[in-house]
Image 1: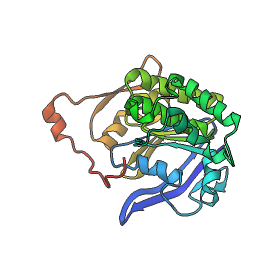
Image 2: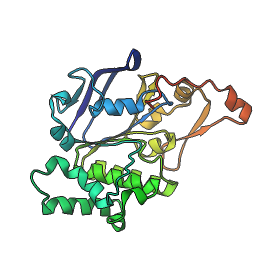
Image 3: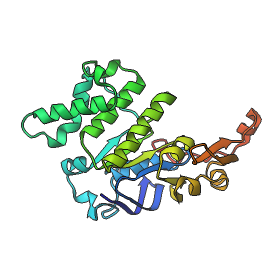
Image 4: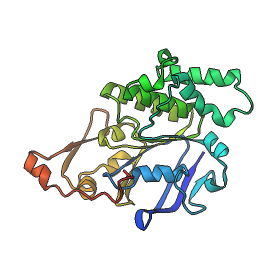
Length: 274
């Protein structure tokens, strides 16, 4: 399934956030969106998922206008994992993941719905948490549950906004390995917003680098994560070498606190976006 973004622009009130974004994401591709705070990463994901409304014919799924699909149809094709997902209600983990089956449920739950939820919990290694209450879990455990909920939709396109932000390094690698496997074995297209350039480098087929709401660079990691691009977009100097895995490894070259204070940081356009 091919996702096409055609001249996508978006404003918060009178403030432009995204400008003329054009992109194609192929079947089974893993694409990371990187860029400074305020560059529009989260906003782009929300526009793709129709949480934020754009003009017609800007987001196409296999050539079909996503704005013409109803919520149930779109939810069967596309899953979304936000940065945070808090709940004050005492839902069990099983119930939270079961919510991902909503597009498929008509009058009552089927045995297959329950089986898929159990499979997703086991797939993410959280089967033992099934009867725990979601609001009692750690941030990292909650993040895994929300990913499991999105996977229970059985989407062909999966959008994730900083999916590893609440996880330690071991679980970051675990989640990204799972997503990479999902993209290749299930041919699911994965699009994720990332801050960690080295994780994006290691796991992505391509990287999209945003600057002030525009595409600055897009391509394989070694073409995008260059010293020149990083300095232009982030305003810092970095040393880029090849890691033992053959992927670019980024090392910032800031040496002391005074140098950090002198770095020119791009101001955030709007506090809602990242």
